[in-house]
Length: 157
Image (tube, one colour):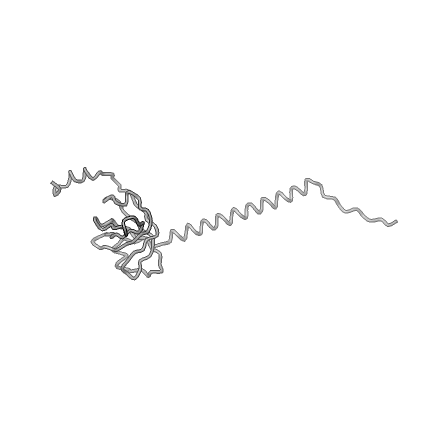
């Protein structure tokens, strides 16, 4: 008869501690990777240029460059293609300069408020048309109804 040494046995407690440690390390690694990814994407979107309409027209960034442009809606310039389409064409102005813009989607109600500042995100194509893929509307600092504006405007009387 030969003697074979018995294999050292692992206690159930030490096996579960090792498993718990590995699980914890995996969870921490996944969380760090997710945090890193979300931080990177947030940083990338925050890097796009923010220009006023007059700066955009003056600088004329290339079409491949994503920018944000701020201005106000030119009264009477808003047109929907075909009436039921979501494609909208309009003009934005700032400091006496205008730019043609287009956006395909639903627009917020404050878009049409004459006191609102509109921020479009997208590309400026061929130095003539701003193609927006997102629209932000900055609420006016002071809410006024159109009736109050008409009463205070002496030319409306």
